[in-house]
Image 1 (cartoon, rainbow, N blue to C red):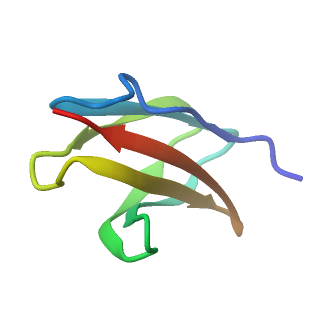
Image 2 (tube, helix red, strand yellow; image 1 turned 60 degrees about the vertical axis):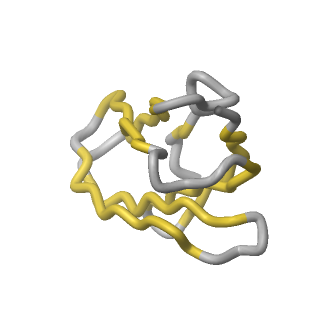
Length: 87
């Protein structure tokens, strides 16, 4: 299996913007998504990631308060985590 990670968003709960750490062992395409609790995709971003540690800065101004999921896919594997927005 491929050793890569995506962490919990900081801060959580989110008030204005949030940062999501991730790292990949080699350069590759990463697909990042934010989904509603019912599974509807609200935001998608394709990232050409270089090897190493990075973070995604996510602006949540267009999202209502509540619970969301975010996922990252890399080389056919995906990681999903939960995020709370509470202004």
